[in-house]
Length: 212
Figure 1 (cartoon, one colour):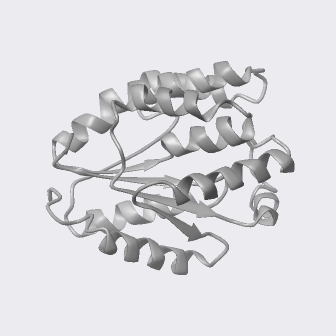
Figure 2 (cartoon, helix red, strand yellow; figure 1 turned 180 degrees about the horizontal axis):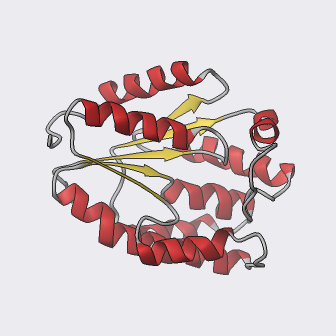
């Protein structure tokens, strides 16, 4: 189904800078008068945020399949309650993480069959697909450097081998995904922002979008 609004997803490993860039883009588009909704996964509404709390709590032990199903439950709630209404209203939706995260983390990282993940993603999202997915990939050394003084959630506590598989997943899935672009996240913030704005223009995200 074609919606009036535009859907931009920021993907990538933990601490890759996607939150910083998502917030910068939100401010930029808002300053131009566009009607923007910024949100995140897991989370985005009160029910999905409760699921997020369970998923990321480092004191919880969650089996791989239960982890996937919790993410998909959160995604179904978030898509139905927040993403689709905003797109129907003609707004620009900026979302941190979406279906590609499950492919990278639960597929490549946990080893769950990708056919299962793709099917659940399709069900949870009602096949709502991003107009643009920006995948921020960084060298693993920055994960440690950027997280030295940060609280680590349950996923961030995974080891380097897991992170390597997950990053490989992002790269391979992005290469097969329509309107997905890999962004070099090792660079300075301003350079990354310039790349983001270039892709926004290249993919005609602002054409026909609603202004306030």
